[in-house]
Image (cartoon, rainbow, N blue to C red; front, side, top):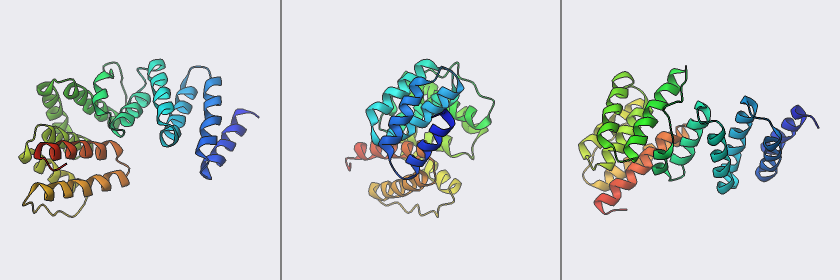
Length: 224
């Protein structure tokens, strides 16, 4: 079976929900590919499928991809998303973003945000905040920088900053505002609802940042 036919069969398996069979065929195809864009694209596709059926194998594949292609913007962004959405945000500190470049404005913004997050998770909070401020000056009306702002303010237990970031996020996502907050549980409920809306709206990184921030707030206030 040639590659086109095999990919067609794999798509058929994937469409009917046979995730394990799909992953197995993709893994065989990935291993047979020589290094290049095709292998990168296939690896990311496979990693996405594995993330739902075999987290350990997905992690190994992401590590292989980022070792082979450390300057690939697609690989770096996908791996960062994988870490953030699987409660491993602290591992962002171990990714190198310095040599990763992109001509796309959206990817450029993401890379700037992730570099800031890398610094924050590495304990360089002042540097991280300064770089985020620079991003916000250019991209005030984008969800990722505001979600990152929320995460930082939550981590620092800055309630005023948390509410301000939350207010902006509710505006940007066009979700009806109801910021009547009398106790910390009210705030956490609003955050949880927004987090679910972001994930449902295909903003996994942003939703993960809210979830991590909500956990930090809850722990700081003794309600989680």
